[in-house]
Amino acid sequence: MSLAHGRPYLAIPGPSVIPDRVLRAMHQGSPNIYEGHLIEMVAGLFPDLRVVAGTTGHVAMYIGNGHAGWEAANANLFSRGDKALVLAVGQFGLSWANSARAMGIEVEVLDFGKSTPADMGQVEAALRADTGHKIKAVLTTHVDTASSIKTDIPALRKAMDAAGHPALLAVDCIASLGCDEYRMDDWGVDVTVAACQKGLMTPPGMAFVWFSEAARQRCAGSDLASPYWAWGPRAEPTEFWQIWDGTAPTSHLYGLRAALDMIREEGLPQVWARHRVLAGAVWAAFDAWGAGNPAIGMNVADPAHRGWSVTAARLGAPHATRLREWCETKAGVTLGIGLGMAPSTDPAYHGFLRVAHMGHVNAHMTLGALAVMEAGMVALEIPHGPGALAAATQVVAKGA
Ligand SMILES: *Cc1c(COP(=O)(O)O)cnc(C)c1O
Image 1 (cartoon, rainbow, N blue to C red):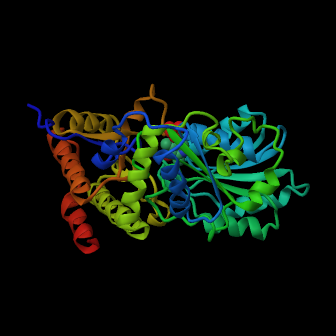
Image 2 (cartoon, rainbow, N blue to C red; image 1 turned 30 degrees about the vertical axis):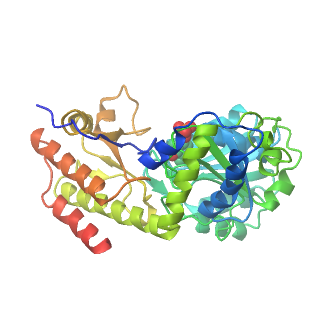
Image 3 (cartoon, rainbow, N blue to C red; image 1 turned 45 degrees about the horizontal axis):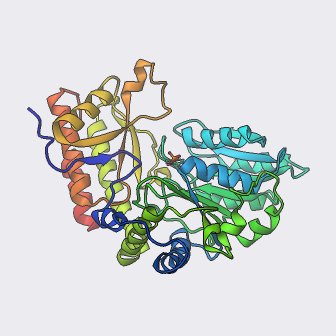
């Protein structure tokens, strides 16, 4: 018998749950793309997008997903043969590095593995070793969605300054924007990349690149920035069509407008605080399940290095896959697969999963997902420690 009938909950780290308000806003016929309401509405998106990234700088919008956002950043930051230093703490950092390499950029990867945060001493040393200042930019994830490791961006900025290196700092916030505290200008970030389908609660289809005035000047004339990818006309259009180098993604824009309204009404610091509490509930549950059960545990040991929007964990193969299947088919909760932790053909793959607590989520959704996970562990006879739900409940009670 299945108890899954009812509203399903997709708790994978993106696409995230789409609010009904966003869906309703998107449901309309094609507007005039030359004059009228759409043009005014889009003008208002720019300031609100700056606010969510914590910048007074420029923002360019693209029709595309997160991978498009990476290529947009690469195309504007670099010319062919320029060098990038990439920090990798999981699959997404490695993938950004691959996209840059494929575009003809020379790439040096500092790979810190899948469970340990970036070592800023190594970053500083790599920059100091680059005496000719060949490295044009440092690329990093803020939260790597595969490992759920959060990189300390202010510490990275400090390491770059300590090395006295002029490289620009570019940060992938696809999994963290609108979830985890992020302050582009205060933290000295030059370029921020995000997409709309995670903390911005809009169906996949738009990417954003914010860039500082310093980045605009240093990158003018990059020979990879073909007309479609060049950020200049998108950020400072003289005609409306230039914002997307063609037809606007009209329905998505109405959805994004509603999502940004929701973030503004809740208040960005409150949005971050909600994610922090819900993440804490998930972490408390895993601590309890894993007590005395070494097979169960979170991927990241130190809470300071865990993202607030997703938690990567292990459950012992094949229990993670069994639990995911149970939760989806019996209870309507879809958990995330373990990404990049082991090849999908390796039996070890079935020991990893991820729980998303990202975007349009509240206490009943997270506590419900945790209770369902525990019901699944009981039903499947997966050994686990007691007290997880009580511990998660305490976190919510204290945090609310
Ligand atoms: C989701 C994600 C991406 C990739 O986004 P796509 O829309 O799947 O291309 C890149 N980086 C991070 C950190 C992500 O979370």
